[in-house]
Image 1 (cartoon, rainbow, N blue to C red):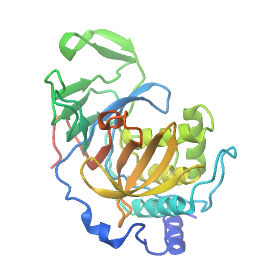
Image 2 (cartoon, rainbow, N blue to C red; image 1 turned 90 degrees about the vertical axis):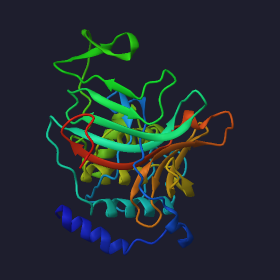
Image 3 (cartoon, rainbow, N blue to C red; image 1 turned 45 degrees about the vertical axis):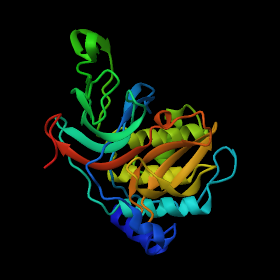
Length: 317
């Protein structure tokens, strides 16, 4: 069975998407203003430190095993509601066009997230330019300046196994380097089937702990462009994890209402947010009932648009 046949078969079995939240919420998604996205340092799937950056709607489809399973019998299986939502999200995403890119180009991502300011955390636009092959310097621009007054930051690429280090004032010093491995912004080497993706995520997580595996999914969906088949595989891998459930009427950093696939571990709820009517992927976020944890620490990321551009700093046409 080829990819299109698999997608058609999945769509026929699921039927047309049905809203998973009341119809009254469907019109409450805000216009896609030119809003932004923020990045944070996390341990990437390869084990190295990567700069997480939200990616906008990326698309996927594959041949799926439409069933839920336990991993190591740890906790309850994914809820039927979460499994159904993720199936629809994968089927819808698979119908969207992918982005083609050359190694010398950049993945442009625009999003909205919380940033630290002198008056406290404020939601603002974030634009990121990520090197497609990881060898060129990345650029991050934030609407809200850092406490030191900076709006931009350059993240060094990895060329010939070396990356420049930062000097005084946050500028790169090409005379001082560190060993590195390229971290591509365009992730076209990921598995394309749910089973292979789940095995990949377990290796990246260092085991089959479902909380760590779900964290790897969050990281991949937030750290560059994931092509269609791999995005589908990530959604379906999420449906295989025990403890995954659905949270209704979540609001992201852009004020958009969505429905979340969520998993709680150590008092933190990691969430994949989807449009409640179209099942389009909106972004990732953390939530907590602990009042001691601030919005700035949680850093919700509302993904707004993704494109391929020729130069860092250039906006899409």
